[in-house]
Length: 228
Ligand code: SAH
Ligand code: DHB
Ligand code: MG
Image (cartoon, rainbow, N blue to C red; front, side, top):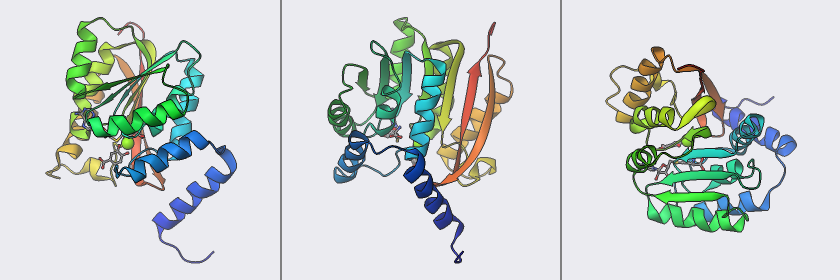
């Protein structure tokens, strides 16, 4: 094999995986293109990661899913596609302009009846959801501003039940997770999150490092324990 940088190899392997394991999906491809054309940041999950979230939702038999950080709706479409009819994805987005792109793509995928897109700062929306006694979610995907991950995770614990799964994206960030003096509030958010997780008895959790078209990063998977 010709010499390539590690990140070129990771991207090429992601392409290899996509060609074999990810079915062509016009609605997902349109959603990615619409986000790009609208100038949204190119930070949506990769197809392989989107499918992982989709498979996790199906494995859990999830009927209620919560997503924090919608962007252009790419991961939302993967998640909503895992729901049975009558299931609901609630997805939270700060930026009205991003939410408008997402809403159009979700509608284009024929999923608008299953997706409840709520615009505003997620901390406020989540607090309101706790207060209003929202039904528990089976799966939560936390993928918004990383500095607020500890707060979103605390809210997710209030909005789930034993057996629910909480996935947190982008926790490793090129290994900066272990830098104590990064001066970066997003890294500090991931560090505080892990320090709290270390003593959090309500969940059993692990963090997996990943490489791929989006570089070197990782995610945390937490299972809500019984009797917590
Ligand atoms: N889950 C998406 C990507 C989300 S990117 C996908 O994979 O397709 C992170 C998103 O979080 C951005 O759209 C950003 O606007 C949003 N965000 C940032 N701060 C937020 C906040 N305080 N409340 C809600 N959403 C926020
Ligand atoms: C960023 C956010 C994400 O959700 C992601 O997957 C990658 C990068 C970011 O804010 O830089
Ligand atoms: Mg992410």
